[in-house]
View 1 (cartoon, chains in turn green, purple):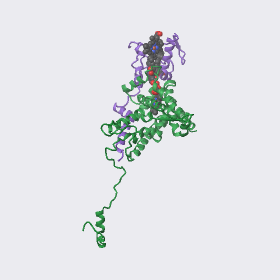
View 2: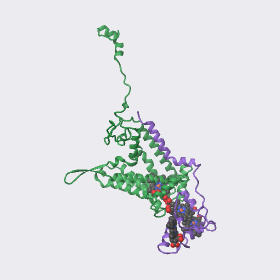
View 3: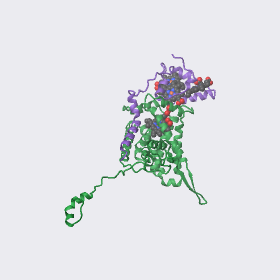
View 4: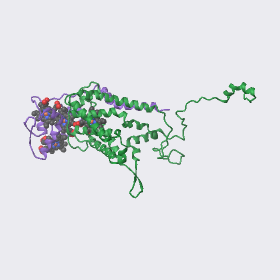
Length: 329
Length: 127
Ligand code: HEM
């Protein structure tokens, strides 16, 4: 059920963009909605991050995956259990660029004869890496549509990505890997009953949305092409606040763009915001200096104390009167 | 203690990355406009209709290449106009679009397309 709702929603959104622009609403889908989407994306992200930023930083959580800094002759695991800022940067970089936690993913299986087996499970990591990295490269390549003149580095990226030199326009490896990796991630959810049971609309919808963006983009480049120069006029217009909607752009482009806008607007309010959230992982971003430095509890507040001296000052006369010894006469 | 200052630094960096295209276009003094193309004089139409040519000219070129190189064909009948053209990059396309610099390249630079056709195919001598 969750699957079908999500799929239907994405198909509906795509058709809305396609038919809407086809029916002459290009200014809505090409100008108004993109601006709203960017606003929601940036505003929502700032809002979410500021909420997290105001939360007190917890006590450092030493992870068990590596030897902490100890006596000089015990070798420290500097990346897994860092004690310096540099080490933390290293650990974060590996997490963000290589998804190291995901790499440590394991699976547990109960076999027919009743014995339990544990094994490493690399497919999720592989699918995830393939998807995220190809998306990054696609986004970087898309910069050619947003700026003029295009810097050489972007042209170089095009050459690299098109190294197979098949077809015209040349075939980009990432534009293929992107939807394939996403389809794997989708079927991973669908294929495993345990995983299917815990999957919600919030899990399927972003997957279908990204698949929709990927396939419509693929279609736009290789199958039903549109005038890229006019598309660039539109995007550059958006970027320099002089928006235009050239007539030569096909509705398919607006279908692609509308799905992207929905993705941008949805991003900060969904699980996709883990892009920012990963930076706040307390087990990854805090150096293990538990034994080296004093860490005060962040939510300690000044406790109002009443010392014995003050107590005596207050009750001295009464104490003397009943014969209790006092320290100061 | 919380990570407010670090978070704000992170947000500012991210924002700068997202609005990089806006900043870049301002820095270069306004993104260049869509280039003016020099269309061949004395000709009123291309091989196929203009919209098709703008978006799909590379398909046509590959179709021509395959027809010539693999099937040994020579002529192409325009589907829009019924006119017959010899299938040749240099001999046909560049016969009308004589100046590559002010036509193909100008548009390709704008769209950041880069192709290696001219490493083998000859260009018409500048006219
Ligand atoms: C999440 C963001 C986006 C993703 C994942 C995405 C994905 C893709 C993919 C996979 C392609 C296939 C060709 C290629 O790999 O270059 C493509 C093509 C395309 N996309 Fe996107 N896209 C995104 C955002 C946008 C935006 C914001 C625009 C413009 C406003 C856009 C306009 C286009 C155009 C015009 C093409 C055809 C390119 C060509 O013919 O070379 N895309 N997109």
